[in-house]
Length: 210
Image (tube, rainbow, N blue to C red):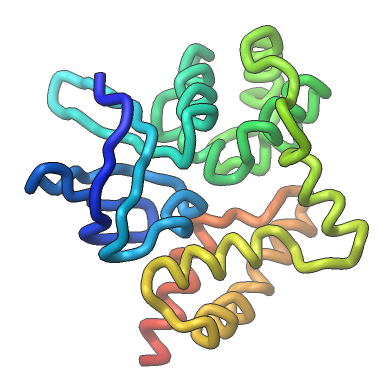
């Protein structure tokens, strides 16, 4: 198993980072939030989980060991593969997932693309005794910001991802504004802002503007 990769960031995409390790470019699949913390040409260290299939070897990367552990624990639930586990971490932090499972918050799980009401209920049952209690307060940060009237967490996450991909702060702000109606529509429907989809839409708006 490859526990981590460490080296210079050679390339970035919305959900992929290429890390140069000993002259070899390692393609690592990451959430937009993890990508947002990387910078081209700068050193990086990602905790990783190698998923082996008959026809593929896929490396998934995470900001820290806790995120990787949750990624692997999520896959112990029936019907959860690496892509869905990563999608869950793309929407929620590890502590937010722990909080959702420990409180039986099915709406939070339904905010993840690909998880419906029945799937959320099943996951709550299967993961209840696996993820444990929240380790800190990260799962509550979004609620606290909203209560304080601060910017929505998804806007900061999306802007950081765009800046990490090489866009200027002004361009990132304009792209966030362009996809805000889409995010508000998702939130109004009872979910949360789907950051991966919003990132793709933001990139499309930036490409049209150039």
